[in-house]
Image (cartoon, rainbow, N blue to C red; front, side, top):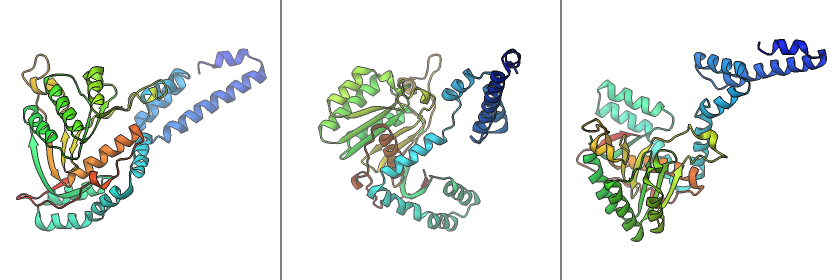
Length: 318
């Protein structure tokens, strides 16, 4: 090792202490990385980084190497904290999963439907819902007017969580709609990513807060939490009145309409869901909100489970 020439020049006792310290550091680093349960290639690379860069290696790992599991656990704890009556209601949906899978197997016998249903149920945290009307929106010119209309029609609550949220003609119209609904007594809560969402500007946020809109950065990076800077939420979620939800790949950005510089447009997909699947989106937002504000969203009014029958009944995995 690099330290060997130095150790040989020290007194025997000091050299022994440093040798023990180096061995403990190497062994401890290896155990620490191995317990992170990474791929063999990644594990070896990080162990090598720790050994070759004794000081810089752990710092690099702190910012770029940690897995999401510890952070996901905090999300799980937050989910318990917002439980209450709302999660009791959601638990009813979870307990019906086997029945839904069996119904899908009977009513839609194609093998891929059955296999997909089993995959969703086996995926921790996912669930299949029913009584949904789902629309596929294939670009922002379809999504933005629908989202704006649903927000303007909101009667109880509006929850938005977006990764990128800029300041442009559409988002100005969105801001005006959010302000109008907040002043009408609708609960309006917004989360934006602490790095990519700040493009909306301070005045934009100030206007919303002045009207009674609650808006916060999600996963904010301060000196105390700077080690979390690589943890970003790329969610693009909207939930209106607990029953209409939007989820997909479109942010709130002019480029979604016009395309980035040098391109004619932007192709992306979003879903508009009316029905039980919106409850799962509401639950996801509630966890993010609690992680950010330590304030629970657990009132049943935010989770209005009621069976809505449509001409087309869609099983929706969320």
